[in-house]
Image (cartoon, rainbow, N blue to C red; front, side, top):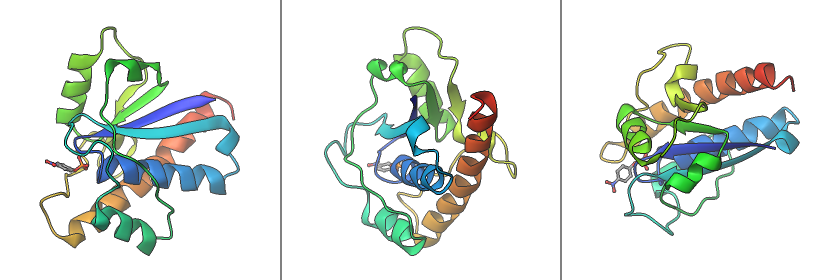
Length: 155
Ligand code: 4NP
């Protein structure tokens, strides 16, 4: 079982959506048995909360089931095989918490063929169109990330 963790700041917008999209894609591809996905935030403000209502709305609009309870990233999360940071600030915060280098730590958009290594923009303070934009970025990036995993782990 390959363990994947998606990380953002609040764990109510980008990373729970990435987790939900990833889960739907692996289910469609018959790969559920191979992976376990989770998400976390570097911030503590939304521990125990459901995803933001706008995150739930955009997932529903795109027929993606979403279910997550907010939790904070900790150094114990280095047990995950892959850690996908939504933006450069998240990556810096993750690195500052990890005691040893982690081979599976990537920026989410490393896997975006349209704009490799850019940030997934934080939609929290913006309008609803920001959520569709984030959805589209995560949809593309998760697709490529799964291709990478299938190739690397010979699934
Ligand atoms: P996320 O968005 O990191 O994509 O979950 C945010 C959610 C909440 C806050 C910031 C970003 N906040 O400052 O509470």
